[in-house]
Image (cartoon, rainbow, N blue to C red; front, side, top):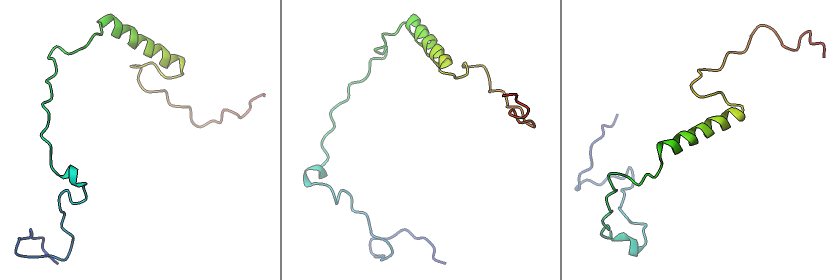
Length: 93
């Protein structure tokens, strides 16, 4: 069993290749450019939504979900299907 030892500069290991940072980058991309300062966001936010607009949008989402066949949100899990009997047995059709 070999114990893992961090490689020293004086030791060369033939086990795995060593990673060379930015070795496969194009020359013009190798040097990091100074980052442009990112403007800080306004603490108040840029939210133009009113409570009424949000309420109307959520109501429309709920109605669309119901029309599409989904269960209404907040109504719990779907009921379990009945087991033990085949619904096609004795069907007069």
